[in-house]
Image (cartoon, rainbow, N blue to C red):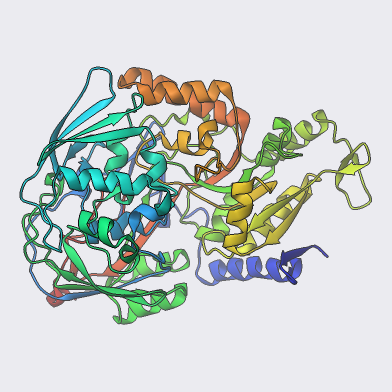
Length: 585
């Protein structure tokens, strides 16, 4: 019997397969149907609460989803739930997905994206870029303060950029995003000049993301460790309390008056308080929302999506994140057997993404076979079928690679050696054990032995940075720019002693590197479209990872919660314009 290792413990294949059958049973009991297009969210599917439009393979949302349409009623407490804790509130030090919306509660950014994804003002009123693309001069607002009373100014920007890249911060995201940042210069109190080592066209885009928000410079200088549990930002809410693994409370900042112009909100937030509770159990998040014990969940359970849509007292939204789709496997191209591109491609073709998406998303997730989200700028749908499920082609490629014989258990062999690899996974609701087992079953059908090793996250992280693995299970990397391809697949992004890199496939491809480097240096939309198209094509040829489905963020809330709009970078909710109309319940 194949077992999933977890230190000295193990989980049998039988138990893991039972999980799959239970999930399937839940769909039967809930009358789910893979052909019911009216209940599916995502690109190409209709969701009654979604404004998503798909044209020529490109996904977009209505511009009015991103700005406030009218004034709300001040007052009240929003009781919200979310599946997991970030373990720290220092947004510079983590890459956790919760930062996408949490960062907009406590912090502000230097710039913001507009409804079309173009850069617009926020704490920076305007900016100039030098002809060589290496110097950015920001003209800052002069009326912004952090909640400790410290003024936001050019010094604050400089201190924040240094904190993002400081070795002590151990940033897995912000530091990588500003890696070309060379130095800063305070021109005057409200003018800051950033000099880059080379032209870097995504610079403004990444500065618009929540992970690169502005923290009080006084706190960074005097007590940086306190940011983890007592952060000081300039955002519309102030942290009142935070207990790890339990929850956090936020109170309105009465003097806030500098929301991004794109959002069209004036003054302070409408809500007096947000009470956030960490609830890992999906059914409890759903039942508390249904019963009215909570008002809002930031992690709506996919298995309850149909029930939420059918309940007139509830509202549901499913939104695709920009950037990179969810990956079922990341393959270490430096380790056999994945140092053979034919093996990588054959395995990718052998995985039934529809099945994987159903196990995790109950019909809510859109299967994905290419490397850029359909709502990302410069997405090219030409390659969306390049790695589509095709068992016959997978078998042909395995044969072509020389793995033509089989042992007594049906696994392919060559020179007396079995075609085998081990994938490392950790406990993760987004990538449950049942998904790994389903992939394992698909691999076995084509004669590939895929062993599963279940380990603590810290152990996997250490092994990832050391390159000590054949494959990693699960993972997504959201970003508001197609430069996410550079972050995940350029050779400069491979982890080292000096860099917490995200290129876990350890891919080194001169052609891809060249294309992604040229894209970073270009501001010409025509050239960028061509370059990112080349990059997407090349990735379907190299197959450093196996994409599974679009990265989806699902929320649900009571019908009396009004004013929900979405952040332009992350497609997650903004709370500054949210208000409560209990008379509508």
